[in-house]
Length: 258
Image (cartoon, rainbow, N blue to C red; front, top):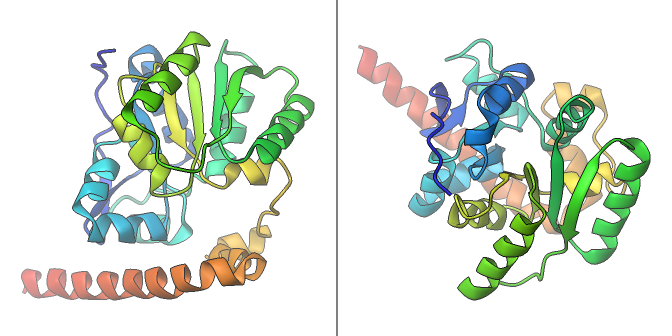
């Protein structure tokens, strides 16, 4: 499937990684401006963790940089990005899903959901049917929780395309979901969006941080309190790296201006 739609050009360089300078309104506008031509592309929902990974890994940097959009899910990204583009603001995975679902009231949109466990995915579908009764869910399939062969991915793409989706929501966790979308760009006919843990949030399995914590950039700490063992190393390493990269790159820019 050939895609000729131009990608949104404005991106803030955050520790050298290009993050789309959007807020929710401009993000949705970019998606629907020429929607048919945007199908087959993919959107990354970026945070501090994925941005540090992109900084450290050239292959993953390419995945983030070549996306249709890499939206600032993490509050630190929008805070840093606003120094370059004042209009930049958070676009979280759960909020983007909710907004697109609301848009589905007046647009004929078909939604496919891929990833997560069978149990959690079934809970998500049940919740969505209750919360968004107008939503056209054309299909869903859980993750196999392992790397798939090229043949398996081709067969998955064929199964998804048979349902004629407009949006393909992917929840495999970073970096797997972004790498998956990059590999299947142009082979899956819907607009792919890697939303990670948003499936569990919308299903009511994992609680969202209170708004006051989100506004203070403490959402990571709230998540850490929910899963300290799993997230301790990630937050200790990536948050520290992010701050260090930000400081060192700022010093380089300051010296360059002198």
